[in-house]
Length: 78
Image (tube, helix red, strand yellow):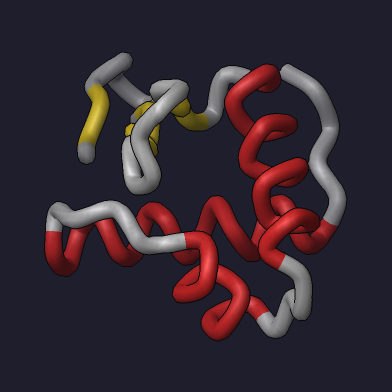
């Protein structure tokens, strides 16, 4: 798996917490607010990096289609 920078790690931690708490993926704006990143474009690029690295799965064409991949047992959560 690819090494991640701190912003990507912050996003991943937020996605995992959000999935555990509500089982509803956050919007790009919610991710910005939670992580202190100012640009939704930056969030989108970091989400794409997490997807390429295998930590999450993005489904093109839908706004909140983010699946967090649980690396401990291969399971996915919404």
